Image 1 (cartoon, rainbow, N blue to C red):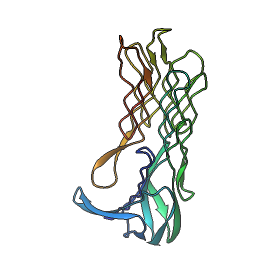
Image 2 (image 1 turned 180 degrees about the vertical axis):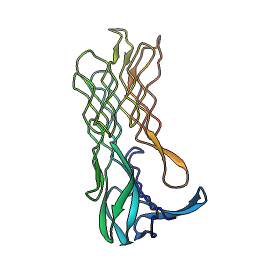
Image 3 (image 1 turned 90 degrees about the horizontal axis):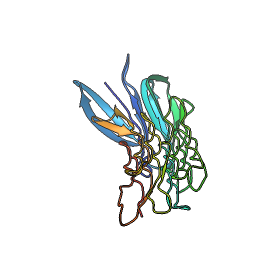
Length: 254
């Protein structure tokens, strides 16, 4: 058996991976970082792409391929008004069997978003294209829409971002506003498998969980959402939102 994954990590959230399994004949290809491993008694070869931007995947002999594409995650919100929501995970797309032929396929690795910015698209040629994650909501502004949506900030104004069906989930809502004395707790961004968690009186919301795939000899989670930010008083110290499993970043605290 032969498998060829391509993977990237931008800000621990943006990832692209493709795997190729032999059917009637072995796929022969070059590109990315190559890893060989054995799974269930069969030998595989993984090609992993980790550089943001475009690269070539050159196929000498085609066959059916397994493809996983994860876009860049959205950036968390800046604390324009006490706290912000967590960024949404980049969209995740997977197919277990995709036919390819000899030729050159362009692999695009999307970067994670800077603060207050959506993530960038990742794609495997024209076969699969995943949308970047939505930015976290802040100061009455909505969380960004994207592969997974950005979480809502603490105030009653604004809404969580919306995820794309089949790629991710919505950002968490609501946030929590404790009034003049606080605390102020943002909601988490959405992940590939679950919606972001809301901010509550007990702390900010965690990012939504990612999904696990075994494309390089071990099961790895991808596309976790970012945790919501928190601001507390000295009399009420509360945790920021944890990042969702699969690369989601922890929320900021002040």
